[in-house]
Length: 108
Length: 125
Image 1: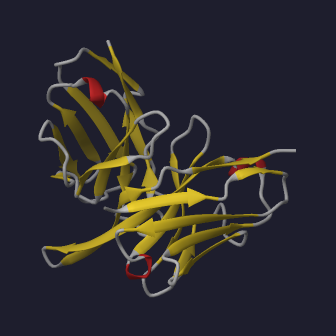
Image 2: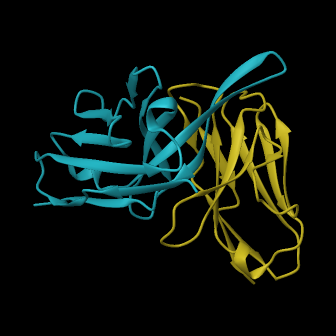
């Protein structure tokens, strides 16, 4: 099983500031990585796939980068609606898709 | 618009059974890869099961032999039959569409592009 480790567990950021979230895979997943946003009581929402491709309707302030084992999700200027939990997910290992434990982005 | 609506969750005793349903609209379930993903209270996301468009089914080791994924094409609905339930199966269960795509001569499967709102399963005596 590929273990996905996200850091930090909680990120405190002021509105308008930049947020940088990290995701590390226990072995290479190439660029087969997705990011999701989840707000309390809601289903996850796809943000990024292929490590850097924004999903339909996702604002340009969300960007993804990385390959292999190290990945980053950057939110360039945090808006009030961006405070949520973010998960990474690898799909290099089919039939054993795994998610990170999440990073909570909270208001500083 | 694409919509997924799960139903069927509830409180069940250990060893019991439950069947979850996921009614889809805006696309055809049988033409897509469909999955169940669960989230235990306060925890992260865990993939549970997938059914391919061709009908093949696969499961996470944690539920293999106890859960069965299926679909009813006439109702455009996905199901998850859960037997021999355990306390550790307590979670919100989401159905989600799994996307496969090809790029640069290689094909990949998959990320989850649409999710339902979830249904709560609580296993407790």
